[in-house]
Length: 196
Ligand SMILES: Cc1cc2nc3c(=O)[nH]c(=O)nc-3n(C[C@H](O)[C@H](O)[C@H](O)COP(=O)(O)O)c2cc1C
Image (cartoon, rainbow, N blue to C red; front, side, top):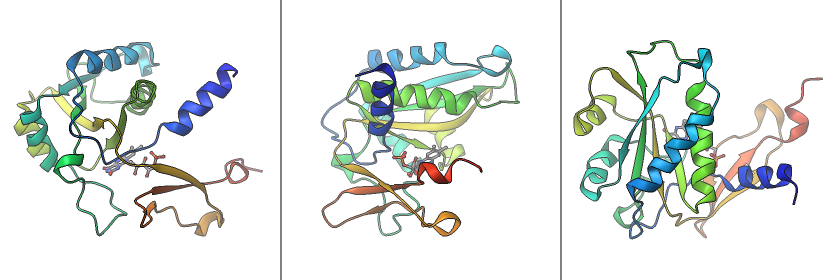
């Protein structure tokens, strides 16, 4: 398989997962390896202003969980039950002492981390919808760190499938779950992504 094919395969496998095997912990060493990947990412003005608060202790994971909001489109689902909750979190923070004006470093780094996690058999979900005050409080985050995203991590306990959607501007972008428990994610076709 060519390097391009390997990369494409990894991107296709790197799906947002929201149900995990809570009996399989992830150690600090693994999380540190994932942070290490971000050192090789591009950075606007090369400031490298993003830092990570690592959460892997079961009790602390239990405190982070209530601050998070899950799967806005799955309106009849309140998030993973206890046996399917994330076993680790990486809280991506902007170090305000370095800059208050971030370019797109956040997304670039999150993608590098999720790809790295996927290569290790770990799944994740990038979460933007969270209670900032609550998260700050439970993690004792200093004022100089502005939490931007929470990456929830664990060994996957759900199947996620990509669907190619059609319908152009009117297409339904909502992900959904079928009775067999499979999570389906619609993606726009290539033909709609290239401006003619
Ligand atoms: C910037 C960003 C913010 C997101 N925030 C949330 C969130 O707050 N809660 C959640 O359950 N999923 C969140 N997601 C996951 C998206 O819902 C998910 O990426 C989308 O449904 C497509 O699925 P895929 O990641 O498998 O391609 C977020 C993803 C991104 C990239």
